[in-house]
Amino acid sequence: MPVEALIKPLIDALLAALEKAKGSALKRSARRQLGEAIKELVKLDPDIDAAEAKIAIAKAAGIIERDIFTAEKMLATVKRASHKRIRGGKPLAKPRRARKAPARKK
Image (cartoon, rainbow, N blue to C red; front, side, top):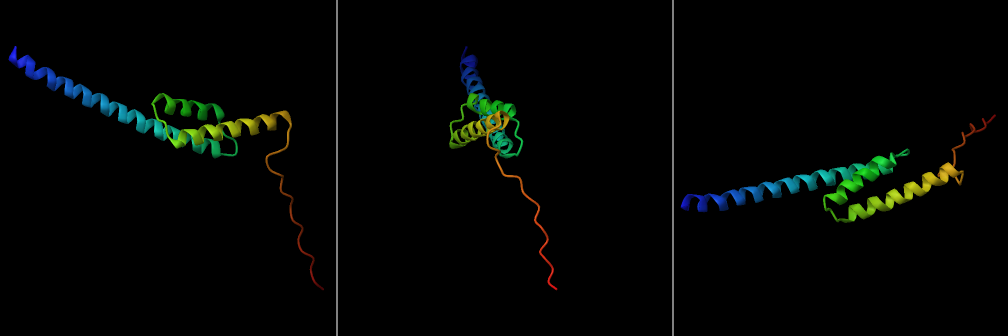
């Protein structure tokens, strides 16, 4: 019995350390996913579904930071802009016209 009494706290401590390491790895991965979601939303033609999924992963991991709120705001803006583009609203940017060559002096 005394050996079991000594081993049990050691095993519990090892399991707790393993869970903590697993949790920190999950959060690190979720932060990376959140960064990728923000990068995706900055693109000209973003993949909205992928960005939503990555933001959901970060939320599920329990990350509550300013980056999540920023990513959610960006996602809402991109969704709104893409919805306007689909419906035929104002374009996001005016097309650039080609400049004429300057007149030559005689």
